[in-house]
Amino acid sequence: MLLNDGLPKYDDLFNPLLKSLHALGGSGTVREIEEKTAEILKLSEKLLAIPHKKGSTEFSYRLAWARTYLRRYGLLENSSRGVWALTLTGNYATEVDKEKVKREVKALDKDLKDTDTSKVETTPQDIDLYEWKEELLDQVMKLSPSAFEKLTQRILRESGFVEVTVTGKSGDGGIDGKGIIKVGELISLPIIFQCKRYKNTVPSKEIRDFRGAMSGRAEKGLFITTGTFTRDAKAEATRDGVAIIDLVDGDQLTQLLKNLNLGVKVASKEIVEIDQEWFGSFIEK
Image 1 (cartoon, rainbow, N blue to C red):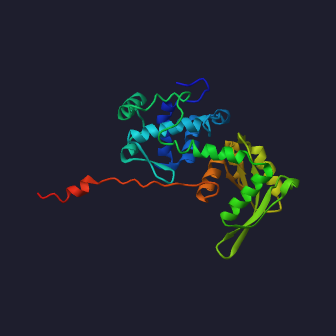
Image 2: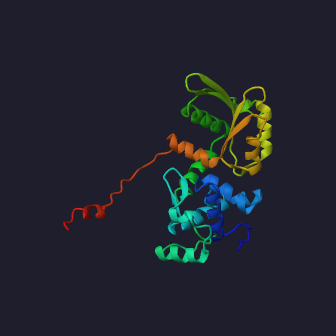
């Protein structure tokens, strides 16, 4: 069953999601899972680019619900590093009855809403993804182009780049700056970068234009955006026979800022649970 926008509902993603994880060898990052599921469903770039009101895209949001349900159902597990994997039970499951999954999961959590994505505000498992990242991207989008270049410069420096410079308002044929990344103590790689504040997707033409601008200046490029990249843009960035361009989209950008503690404060809360089974080992028989 499809909603009016042409994308599958969250429950229609259960089996494609399972299939994608099996195809990925049993585990994958959110990004890898999204790309593989979209490939299996043969979803168009137009459908994948439909935005969601809470940030990211509608497809990402619905797939997040699908992951949550299959996790609650016992087929998936996820780590704090953002990797999702099939459980032992999931390894043997190639297909599920979506109505049975929904019925059993809702029985576990009576407060879990009917996840018509036009009504649901957040997902129980990925609530963090759709709140702080959205707020952080909103903040970055408020920056002027020159301020965003300075932010990119800071990110690169904090990530180990040296001699990072930006071109400023004058621009340089589509190049926003350059830097050098050290590999060990012996090798230095010059990098040319471009940083663009986009709300939507970056097409392959932008990647080709950027590669043309960096021709003869560096063998490695870096394209950073607040938006996302189309499937064709990703393919163009790694095309054989030309300079490789690494891509950083809005999701990766927010994660970088968080990991580097730039503009983000992470508060931790200690949760203490009593292991009753452990104490049971002291009971005299």
